[in-house]
Length: 411
Ligand SMILES: *Cc1c(COP(=O)(O)O)cnc(C)c1O
Image (tube, rainbow, N blue to C red; front, side):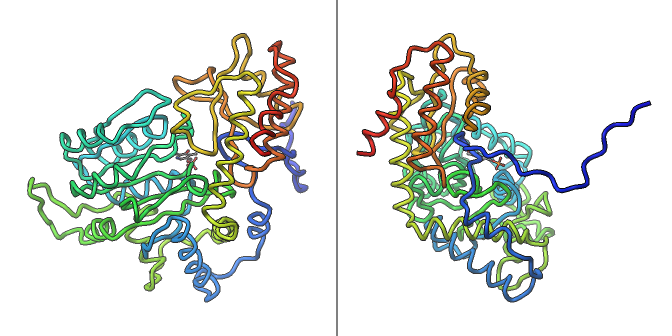
């Protein structure tokens, strides 16, 4: 009889060096990694509560908001999305979701699990939803909440939100936005655009690991969420449904999480200290550079990558006018096995680029330039490697076509 090999008791060797040029996660900024190696302190240690307050203040700047309740949900970006939806939505509430990619469908699924009546306004992948389509749907559906994605990495599109915010204000509808893919690399204005709740993650333009979800909650949303604390109040709405039903999650109950982060410091979960160090460092690195400068850096390197893949003779997917700055989807040339090429990028060059989902599966690669990897050397190295891989796959690429086109953007 053979026994299965037992796991090694000695420390694991380091992970292989990789350049992560997919749609996320990306290589974390060295200062973020350094911050995450700091020693722990107690949950209510004055230095910890000070760090929490500082993190709130930093993320108010990142989200461009005065919202007092700007904090971290412990978990990946989806924990932030679920916290927002499960805390805002009561069974039977109508929700409208503009769907232009995979993450719109995720909002639909989560809202359905909250017992909401979900309506969608959909466009083909590669487009964004026009304001008029949202306005018509809001008038028809009369939702309590519009839940939208800003940047959908599945299609690379960036949904304009200023108009939707205005419609929601005018019609008295709450607006939630998932800004995970876009925040820090594309303009995002919580207050100026009238967004009630927005959430994100660290592993895209913020240059950190996944595992913490910054979220901001505006006054109208706070009121709606706090109203659900009085479970037995039996408040009735005009359509005679009981309001104030209990939030169906303890971990993701924003009313409790706000009380934990707020001046009352009511114990809820144990804050994920190491993730908080990381999230705080992400915001510090970003704000030290300057939010506008960081967005401009993403625009520059994203444009260089876009022109670079075009210089290799590849065709870009979707409405480029509405593309996020930080990721580009490129059609896989005829006759090339997309997954084999990605494997060659990884094994021969240590570079990861992204595959695709749903209708785009096997048709496009997604190449990111985000966070710490929105850099000239990362762009040029990726383009040089891609040229070699394409040539090996039999594609007639112009020598130096990718790096040349990118260099022109830089000069
Ligand atoms: C990448 C991404 C996420 C990621 O969610 P995780 O839970 O962190 O995996 C969520 N929303 C959008 C729009 C994204 O692009």
